[in-house]
Image (cartoon, rainbow, N blue to C red; front, top):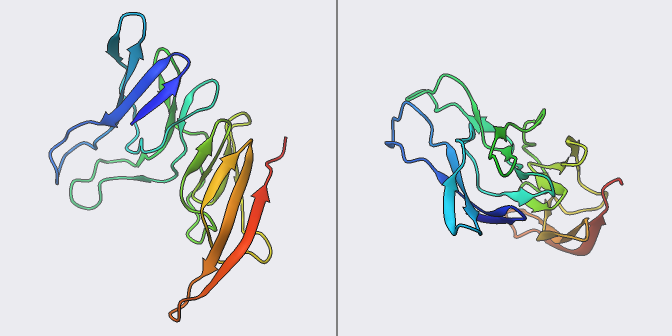
Length: 182
């Protein structure tokens, strides 16, 4: 994945490890493109196994994915590695997310949606400025599953949703807007 930042482009990928049965996880690795020299510089390795969604918050790169994995019963890595984390630039120092909650199993919006200061992940709103997590919950009267969602000017917009049943369910045509606290 390539993420633009004021410092330069950041390319993230996974380390190659034998699969299945590796003794170590496929950690997320990164490189920073230096516009002046026209070269990529490898950044220090992270200690995360996610790296699917990065956002520039104005001060650092953040991947807000919640949860982690330990390799399972076969090939256990001896500890849990988080899916998410953050990187400062230009040095690329990595750190885990601060006090990340466990993803909600019944989250209204479970996908990761990010924009600048805010991200939605596993049913929680992440505020990078406050380095905090808030259970977003489901608005009164909202469908069980949210429809498409996006950030617009630090407001979360959710278009409809559906209450799924074996008969097809009910589709909501209501639009929801959430403004995080200032």
